[in-house]
Image 1 (spheres, rainbow, N blue to C red):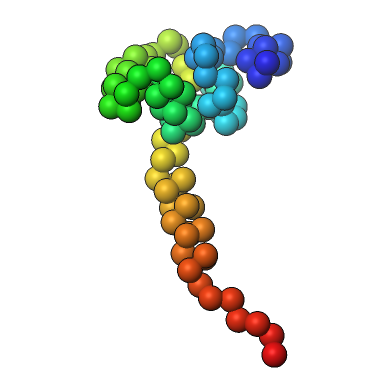
Image 2: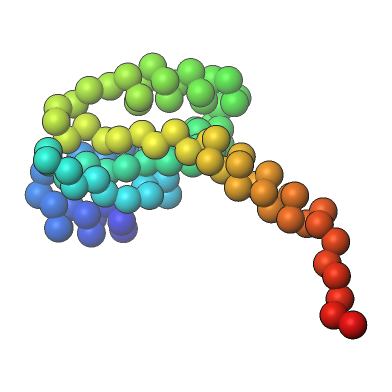
Length: 101
């Protein structure tokens, strides 16, 4: 559904089939609009059908390494940001809450 809506708004936008869930935005810089995908979500989707190492390898060689023109999708390597955020949540849970007296 997301891909169809994007195609209506942007005529020449290129998408990766089967990875709608991984779309996190659109880049509209000086080039053609490009779809931005979450790499962590793409890997998660691939892992539904293959082992984690195979999923990562498949992504790197068949998706990230593919150039299909100026409107090639952007792969946002968000793993580190997710890890940092999860770490901050964990740290916040460890901080004792002081009650007002």
